[in-house]
Amino acid sequence: MRAQGFVQGALISLLVCPPGCKGPGTPPPPLHQLPLQGAVVSGQPLATQVGLDILEAGGNAADAAVAAALALAVVLPQAGNLGGGGFALWVPHQGQGEVIDFREVTPQAFDQDLYLDDEGKLVRRRSLETPLAVGVPGSPAGLYSLFKRHGSGRFSFLQLCAPAISLAREGIPANSWLVRSLGAEGPKRRLQANPAARALFYPHQGGEALRVGDALIQEDLAQTLERYGNQGPQGFYQGQTAALLLDSLAEANEREGNLVGERGMTAADLTSYSSLVRSPLRGWFRGFEVLSVPPPSSGGFVLLQVLGILEGLPLEGQRTPQGEPTVRAMHWWIEAMRMAFADRAEHLGDPADYAVPLDALLGADWVTMRRVSIGPQADLDCRAWVPPGAPESSQTTHLSVLDDQGNAVSLTTTLNATFGSGIMVKGGGFLLNNELDDFSIVSGTPNMFGLLGGEANQLRPGRRPLSSMTPTVVREGGGRVVLVLGAPGGPRIISSVLQVVLRVLVHRQDLESAVRAPRLHQQWRPKETRVEKGFDPELVKLLEATHGQPFAKGSAAGLIQAIGVGANGQPSVVSDPRSGGTGGLQREKAPR
Ligand code: DON
Image 1 (cartoon, helix red, strand yellow):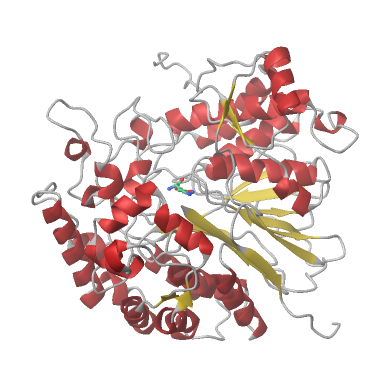
Image 2: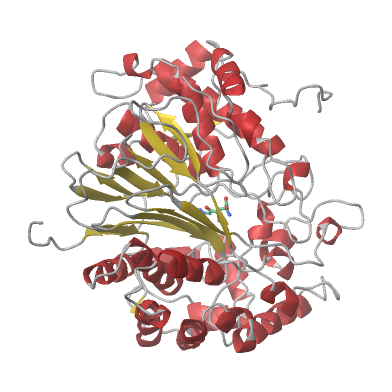
């Protein structure tokens, strides 16, 4: 076992290094098999097709990811977006890769007081469906950065926007997934309160929603995409699109009885937005290299801490004859998640503004301490890491792309809730996020996902809210990509990615079985572990009886979009059967 020194902003490397690995900064051996074909998987078939078309026209993984993400902004308005943000993990065929952080930012005039009533109590809906919910969008800056930094150079930016523009202008048939989302209570209330969104999504008499097969034509969005395609981020953060966005927020503010006063989002908030380039977090698990995203997402951290804890446990001896994890293995999974989410709540936030002690939290000492403290009984009161010497203190969407040159992109983007804040930019045709609910606005008061937090993730001007997005790539020691995956689902993103990684790497399940298997989710608070419908009730009973694990029913799964690559270089795609997405393989080429 080898512990590395950890430096924020540098590649974080955890624990065991595979044979032949010389540590961070060492390029992998150049010769390993390229994938036989490229592959794309996303949450909507039309967006997957856009990505495949770009690969087949000679684009690389970055080109295809950008075009597919823009298509999602049109064909999956629940989550695909221009008005939200996310993280993209670029892992090239050779070398270390990087993360593009295009998380939304808190406008300069927003602060905690705006979210509280006269008695100082949090008013929940302000961070969910009013202008106070909306962070400065990051997607237009982030997708452009992915194109500029890693695109093949074979396409202009406008060419990558073109498929999305056509889909918006010519229209797409509303599918049952979209229609179901429009009928759900929360999204319906938010969207119907906004005249532009109501006109687009509820066009029938009496404000009835689009029906399956109705054409969804988005001409305003087509024009927004054209301005962006022609001018790059300036065509969004300045000029007509910016003016329309600010006007729409001002109108929404009026409808709320002037909630924000003079403290709304400004033109300066928009022009000063920039995406950031960060180093991936990296850990080793069973000789595989796991790359994921650093703060301001907690996804990579929780994934790597849990894998670090499990790395030293004999999971291979805990397999049922069917290859499933035993009761004891599940107990270990749950306890490791409980521990990592406790650290998340206390210590994770925007590193620009809060010193996240990642080196300590992922260091061998703490990870080992966590591992040895797993006992036979659930530790429902487990506490977060305490700095030495300190007093004890108290709808998103993911796409994965692999090209036949071995480059991978794992990209998660979100509006936060389904259709975000429901505030649609009139004349711009796009929805704005409600990402500011990801902050812990009042300590001890859970956010929409039941997540708690403290000072580390307190809402402050200019801060990025803590995320759970976990776009991840797993490589073999030699550098060959074996998995590209991620999911939507709030904190369930992390547990879903984790469980698929464990099932594939430890239980040797094929990717499809690993994704299909019923999931559990543990996030420290609430104490109960949630299990999906279909999770073996006998297993639940045994975990309760043998290990004192409490359970609750509920939604426990994020929607995985994964690419796996077999030892012979053959990729396979799995779009979570719980979602309406698809994957596809690039057409085979003549043998190389
Ligand atoms: O960044 C986050 O963690 C959340 N805003 C993600 C929201 C999400 O995944 C909703 N999807 N089901």
